Image: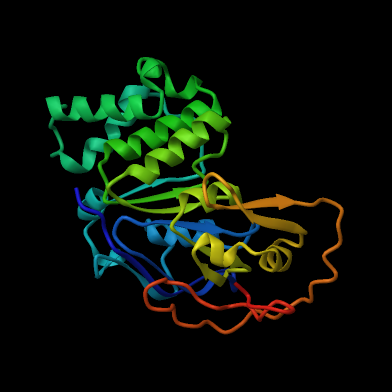
Length: 293
């Protein structure tokens, strides 16, 4: 399995004349972990749904290794792309092992049974998310966190070269959050993931795209985009950002109750092409006394 290149080009999605996503472009090079961050309602989930072919774009396209994802046969795309969505999957009357085995479906013909290789991959996926002990249980009777781990295991069993995840750490305790994101970091695949926890995004993602009101307003490495200025502008909060002394990743500390009025509001800037090499943009005006980085 080799990692896939993903390109979203000028994507716009509308619903009832309302823009869910407007003119969004992003790239994920083979093997990168790309994070989508932004407030609730900023368009992260809608963008992901266009990538895994649930919402058809009004304009723009999604390219997987250069091919239009919406033109690929479903089976071929399913051998490349796996998705973990926010819905809990409640109402699935199957055992946990049967749910995870569904990840092997794109690699089989209609009436094929499980092979020894299928069994190995299913078992490995369950072990990876600490769910081997749940294999015989009814999926519908699991807790929200247990279901989430099983759905991630199903995606791992699919052996994708492109993995798309919408808030995969929802419902998980901190140990399993770290376990899951560590798995994503080590996969020989390209990963596009929406996350709310900015510190986890800073540690596990190679690059981040920051969305607000359906538009990308910043992109680059976590150190480039996670600035106090951007956090005030996008989230309306005051925060300090420091480099963690052991991990080297940016660490965001929020300061509840402190005013953000000292940071002037700015209008969303025009999109600018990514800088060669970094994949970043310079979307925000300079901070008072310095660079937007």
